[in-house]
Image 1 (cartoon, one colour):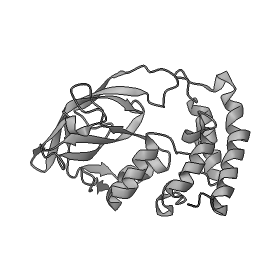
Image 2 (tube, helix red, strand yellow):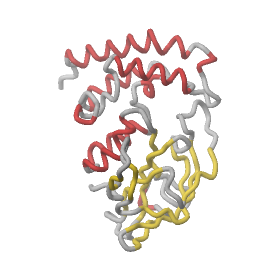
Image 3 (cartoon, rainbow, N blue to C red):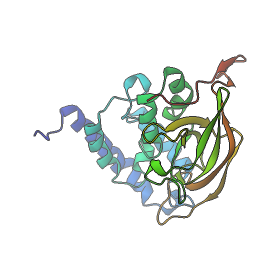
Image 4 (spheres, rainbow, N blue to C red):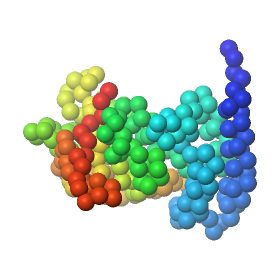
Length: 253
């Protein structure tokens, strides 16, 4: 088996290593750079992200058509290793959880309309995202087969009731992926829904303390008490006075 790194990935690895050494590690050594949750504060993060974008080191994991550089999984393993020389590293390159995995899911499964509405603002660094799956006992943790949160059909819409916790990044997220049970089918009884922070019918009840540095937005407990996820809702088009239709509620798959 050939474990050699291609010249393209090796050059990218060196670029990332130099950026981390020159731009990020000096800030990590400065206590004034940290926020109250032991992560990089908003303003230095904004400056570093702008530099990473200018150098073409942004969202490397996504296809070029979605604003990335199309680096495959093996190549990203090399990049992640260099990024993680600093605890600040991955978020600077827009390659940190939960946005990283959420963007990959949306790139693979989202319709073009869903990608335009949900994914592109995350790719552009304008909003953050969260993936809401884990539940308190007896609900689903790493086993979604135990999931208690339900989304019930109401006409063309779904209405969600349930309880999630340890949802990474929820405190700062605007765009959410929500996994809920839609039937008792053991294999196909779950659906992944898209919703926005401003949608009514849910709330964050607390930010749960953890040991060590926290991701931006923390790890939160969420209660859903009638969140209505509409098949199509109206939203204002960016920079226009007309309205465009927000895409359908669920990911295909």
